[in-house]
Length: 285
Image (cartoon, rainbow, N blue to C red; front, side):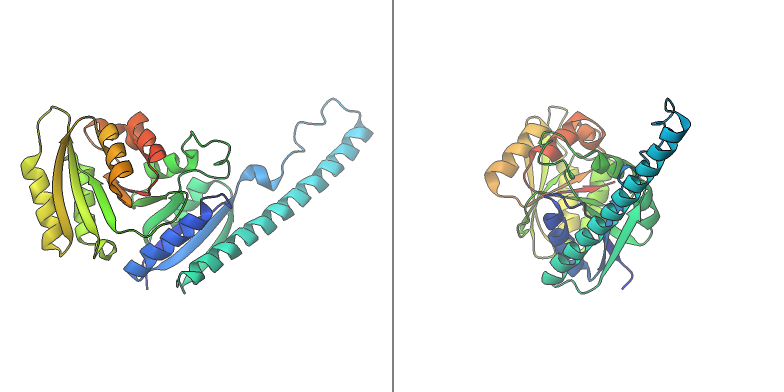
């Protein structure tokens, strides 16, 4: 089994959902799961620098020794916390039937560690927000934005709570990334047995009737249950309304487009939509 799903956990309220969605995806792909926790550089100590310059030599030496001991204690606690987070993640994945799980405890920059792990990955699963989720519910996690911009594999953005996925809404704007999303879906066991609605929001620039019909045909030819839908309006408003009112379980999008959806991760619209909807979002580049 060479395919892997990378689940990024940080002990936040989203970690449970990240693990359960990673297990769901891995089961459908017959893939292994790598679960990773990255200890940030600030968690690893380093408080001694530039704090003793105005002190006399003896006081400075004593303070540096005390700070070094504090840093060492902080580093040990961060390591212990990271191992506990990974132990919990392995237990969650195992409870959902995922037998092949490899934990990774890393120190440094999350994006750098993800880039190193990217070869061999089928997808990355991350929560919408991280450790500060309860205190910054109006903000999308900065690590999520960095990762989506940097990696080439699909990024599954887990909502706060896990629920079974049965109905999928695909935001289709005719862009290269939207067409790639359709092609990847047609070739993926993840979407077998799910109800897929391919939606184009006509902003007045003209409908994409032929393109959306071709996309639906591509999915149905692959044995998937897919239908087309075209609605007028603004993409962010229409998508949020449909997700809220019609019981979709997953929103699929290209991370880049040529309509207002283009700014979803790159700028305000994509960021606002991922932040606003209460279901997971799968982003393709």
